[in-house]
Length: 174
Image 1: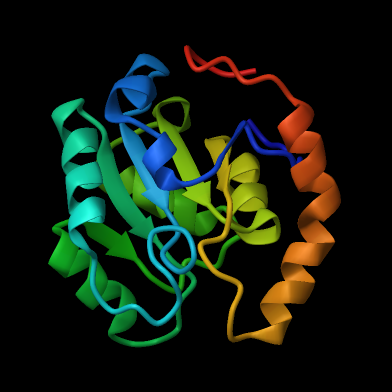
Image 2: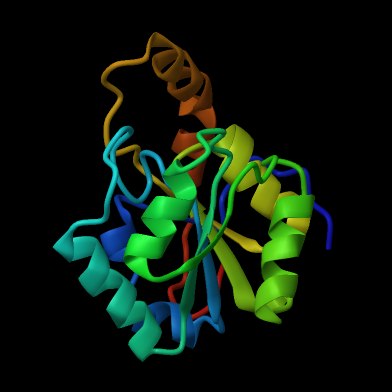
C-alpha cells in the first residue's frame, strides 16, 4: 500500500492514551515510535518510570515497541533504547519508507500489523502512510527551545485540525 496522505490514522493527546490492549485489538504487534517530543522531551537522556510502565503494558499485550528516530546524535537513540530495553533504528530518514521497512523486517512484521506514533506530520505521519503502516499523531510534549519547531508545528495546524474531525474507531481504524 502506498499513500501520500498527511492525515493520520489516529490522533491522541499522548502516547499514554495508547494502551497495549487497544493496539492489540486493532491488530498491531509492532509500534514504531519517534523519540524526541513523542516519547520524551527534547534533550532528556533517559526514559522515566511512566514510560517504562507504558512499554511493559504494550509488551504484556504482545505489542513490541521499536524506536525509529531521525536523530543524528551518535549516542542519543542507542543509549535511550538500551535503557528502555527496546530495539532501535537511528538516522531513519523519515519520511522515506526505508527506515519503516527496515524496522518491520528486523521484527518480522508486515505493514498490516504495524503502527507509527509521532509528533510531526511531515516526517512521522507522512512516512508511516507512505510505508503502508497505521500512523498515530500525538501532541508534541514541548515546543520550548527551538524556533524552527514552532514553524513546523504551525505549518501542520490545518492537517491536525482535519485529523481531529475524523472519527477513529478504536477497534480497528477509520
